[in-house]
Length: 193
Figure (tube, one colour):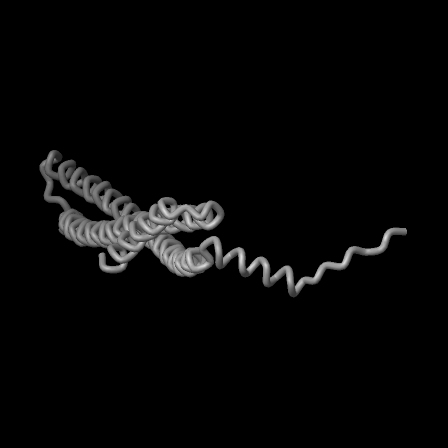
């Protein structure tokens, strides 16, 4: 049975560190630092993207519920209109027969018309509330897209940083920094807007 090969790990570690220092250890550390910062920014932007899309979806759900209530109001409006039309037809039948319609029947026509106006006002108010929720949700979705683009730029920058570290390529590192700067600009614009 062959004996195990002994490797002096301390000496090996020193040799690796020397090689890193010879071949741009400072450059690699710079890439590692910027990549860590970009990863932190990507995580924050990702959280913001998730939060804005969740809030937008909640607002869209509320808008849908409000629309359902507005539709109910319009159905109620139509029902009152039908009742008003039946009461008006009853008044017409009485008059066509040359008789005076009962006062309560004429009062019903007026009552249904008044109720219809109040119901229509309520339905329009609900539609305005729905529109406000929808507009706010669309604004949040716009913000979400900005955050998502920022995350994509950060991820590209991180990937380019890894390639730059492996190849020790300064132009690739410059592209990484440029992509990271693009992500940062998009992120800040979304925070401010």
